[in-house]
Length: 87
Image 1 (cartoon, rainbow, N blue to C red):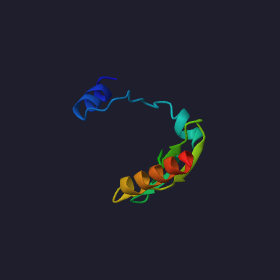
Image 2 (spheres, rainbow, N blue to C red):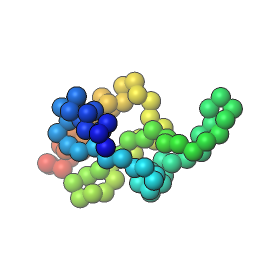
Image 3 (cartoon, rainbow, N blue to C red):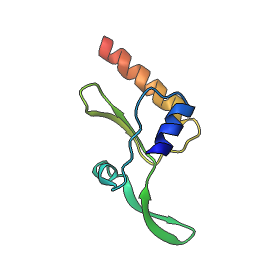
């Protein structure tokens, strides 16, 4: 998708961005859920973060994430996980 490539290039991301247009991955991770906003219910993504270990297993999950401070929390968990694996 062109929009993904522009976003990646704008922020200098060193990896490809993927689109889950049929919600298959979101459903597998349990984040495609019924949401209610302003009295209306509709299906959508529940913002969540998954820390995946080098073997491809889920090491940690943060459900229903709020953006403020979340990146620092994930970075701390990643740093701790890496230290644990080195010892």
